Image 1 (cartoon, rainbow, N blue to C red):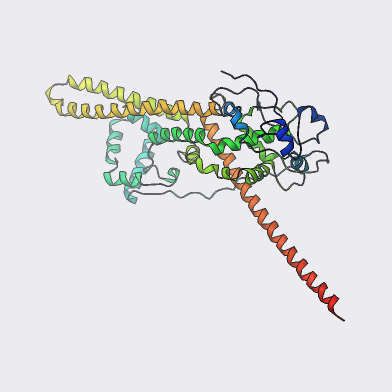
Image 2: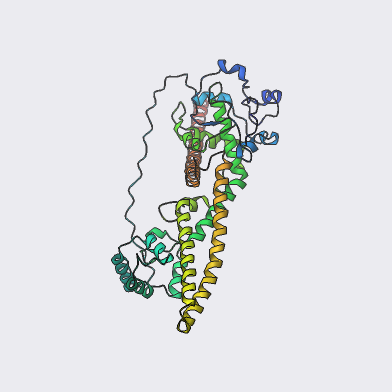
Length: 420
């Protein structure tokens, strides 16, 4: 469902009316003046022309939101990002990711027991996730009786389980013996990151300021008059460099926020689950497809147990103890399965709502892409802000040194005048 398109913006974002904007802004911009403006470097975003209901961009269209967005100093923007001079910049060299040193395996279990477990797992010759799924599904065509006996021998003790639960490092660095699936944690992380992002007012202000900057740069072009932009446009801010080649549009965004909305600079603190959502499971992020496969394996496993329970009930008095134990296990497992199913359903809705919040289609821009794009933006923003602070400190020291030199020079000149 879409809302009706708003009238073209005046590019004096935050002004309540044009007269107020003209009195407050160093340079007033009206749509019919675009031909007289100094051409600016465009922001090659994918613009949103109509805001979907419930999205960030629909909220931005509310009258009370406009007054909370900082105005853009067009004169300053022209001095930094105009294209009046020939562009002699070289293409920015892409930093190649450094080759990380090979991580040593972390062993929490007794060395000999861990080594024996590794040997057993290698003999089975099956990826650990596949092995787990076959065990959950009670699939004896993949794991035979002898292999099951071996697996039982290496079931973790109570002490070993406590050790594994207390491990807070990178689970990819654990040996196979120590790796454990954490489906519930992944589902909770999805719910938490979606809630954090949607509830962050600081992130909303940052996004609104980017919208203002982009519309100011793109005024008079097909990319202008946007009510929003696609999420991956966030990654393009670093590609637009100022004429002096000393800053990018990302640096300028940090400067504008530092000057006019300093309270939102730490918006990353609102997003504590963003990095865990991007890195859950080691090097890879949470994958909804993999979580669905795990849920399917659990469901099939429970069905197998139900069938086994029905069969053992007919086996006579000799199987009474087994039947009783299996029935108790199934009751607990089914309760846990229902809890996981509810959590999985909630997580799926949360993942979709996160994409919808940015005006995205969850099919075109799935959860994994949303969190990775947001995390990349946060990291780039933090780096640009830190570089701005260092540059300000250097300029402050340079100004102090020049003032000291002038002071010494003035004192020397005064002495020269006093000499007979």
